Length: 255
Image: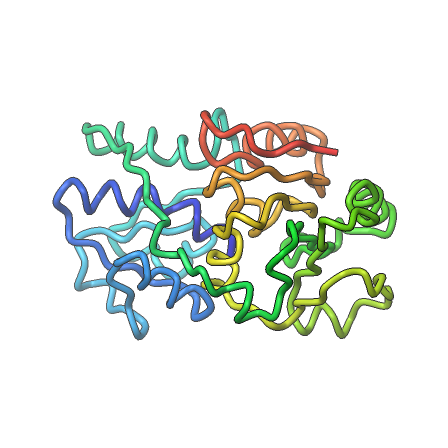
């Protein structure tokens, strides 16, 4: 899901430049993109109907016969992903693409009540899972996240909120403290954006994944265990350019 977020500034830039843009997203992300005001495709597109299709490099088998620009968003980065996409397409189209998106539409003063969260506490979101490259996650890394939570776990003014999907909850053999508020399987993408946007939500602790990027978009801090990659070179590159979406983002602290 996080990869969808990389393309939002580019989509907004095309729209602001006068292009008609339609977006094809995974079903889980459809309501989120509609809330942003984007035109979301409700079915598989006929690519011949478009002047240009932009997508991730992994979809080359589907798009090789059409006029398309394919990008590999996690390879050979020289700047944060959103900046690199904007820079690359600005050069290709010979115009400046540099639009940002407001996420004020995800303001919901009742989101804590809706999710049955305490409304008189400062909240920390904790996610010990990562659906992308999950084979790189191990108990040692999760234990490091739990250690980062220790200063908050005993504080009466804080509540730690356990995030994740129902499937992740069912597969996880760990038994988390009853001091944690368990929201696993109870939120969708719009819920997460509205939750992170609430001023009582202060911090994210987890892996370099979707919720980390959401916190950055709202200018909020994250304590993150970088899951790494298969090669040392790629790990070094992504730890430098993947955890923050833009060059002026400095919201993530690697632990």
